[in-house]
Image 1 (cartoon, rainbow, N blue to C red):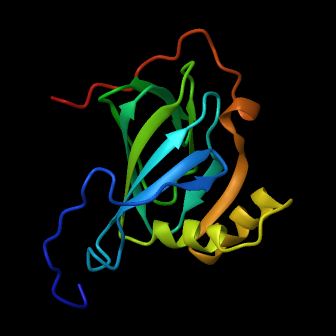
Image 2 (image 1 turned 90 degrees about the vertical axis):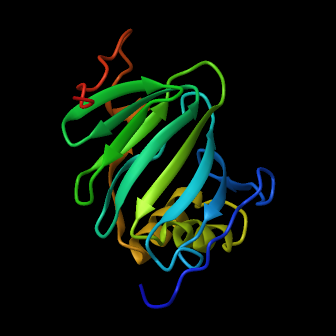
Length: 170
């Protein structure tokens, strides 16, 4: 860390929701408040929605399912989990997720080190209009994230049942 980090709390409705291509998001803890160690964001994901397959060059990513039913792809593995479940995508491994439930889903996303919020800040600063996905790809590229394939709904037809991930609790 470059500077001492001050303890803090974020109240439930303290931070605003902003539009993102998959629904809405809000930053719960940014890299500035955590000394660059991590970023914590909350995402409301529309049914059937999820990001394109992408790779983070510099950060690992954890997805904790606050509500809903999701599938995750990391490398060649396809996992399923729902409310209370967690998935991990290490840096350098192509990954994506999709809300496979019938209603909105919610994820708590933690990246380490921090900085993910900068992608969405850059994306949110663009003028509204067409080119949304190209703008998001450019914002990602500027912060070490590369789009490497389509979203799961286009690349991996949704089977009736996706097997849950391996049990790593032992």
